[in-house]
Image (cartoon, rainbow, N blue to C red; front, side, top):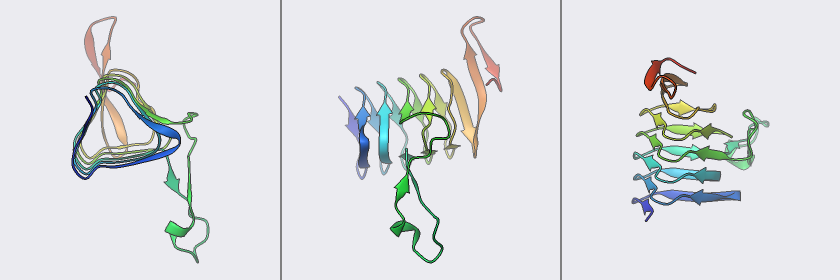
Length: 144
């Protein structure tokens, strides 16, 4: 019951690439590294999701010849996207990012830090536009 649209690239890291049931990965998306997708995660086309980044230490060598590493800026071993979340078109999600459940990542966003549950984020870098407050049953603008 997982939909993987045409021209999607999937590259599992050492920790694996786990895709939950009912996920829909849009056309031309690329997922690389140690990634966990919860149930019913939706991707628009042309997004890039990677727990890894390229090394660049030696200016005399091509970047592609210097290998990759897993940034640990957020303290996680993998990149994860929570159940029921939607990643818009042309997004980049890079590093050991955890995106909570039922989040929306706006089109053309770049996400390098964790996103709490029930948030709408957008921008480059992505910022919280609003978050659902369960206590008041209302959206809070600009919440974090």
